[in-house]
Length: 278
Image (cartoon, rainbow, N blue to C red; front, top):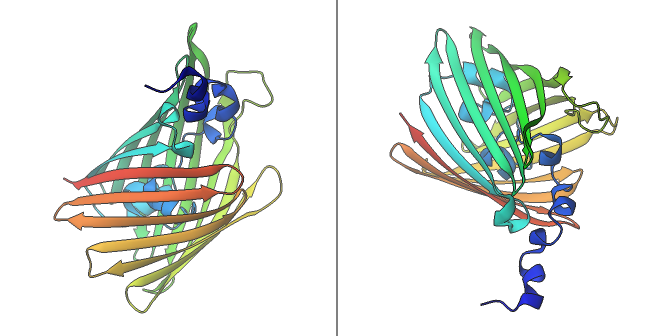
């Protein structure tokens, strides 16, 4: 039993939860992080493929006829009271893949839920296009439909060679917002990036994201495959300055994913994922 005076230090979010929520995109209804793989690469997402593309760069769905179910869970600042859960499903459709991702997070009395409907299409041997529709709903204790937003996103991926891929993505270029608050809108951005494969089992990722603030955010990461079973990831992001580490383990049709993100002046956040190939 924890003494009452020590409880706020063990669970600071229970004392001033709204203050802690302000550190995260979820306060603006942006529970849209592409997932554990992206977190392990310090937020690089424009060049990822498969399930990570549903809320990332939807063009990544166009490469493979993937059937998969992915469950994810993130603990910002290692606080379970602010856990963010995600569930994704990817299925083949025509010449590409369709994907749906549901995301939910919040604290007692405040709930932030999002839905992505995405599709990626392969339009050439080395070229894919993708688009996604986004819906976000914020509920509070006294009002189920407190605020909602609707927007979309789209992107491209181009395979220059077998080792080099370039990509671009635009997020929330236009939106509908039921709130009149100037601070309640989704944050639009444009991302440009790619990866380069070297020594067969390694890939170097780089991405530049331009937001409404006008200050570009740089992401860089590296991924190494060990024996086709284990993947190790690491990366760095400039704003907020942070280092990340991630890994993945494959057991037949199951992939176990983990990522940890150390944000300077804030603390450590961790993400977990379980992917099953249908």
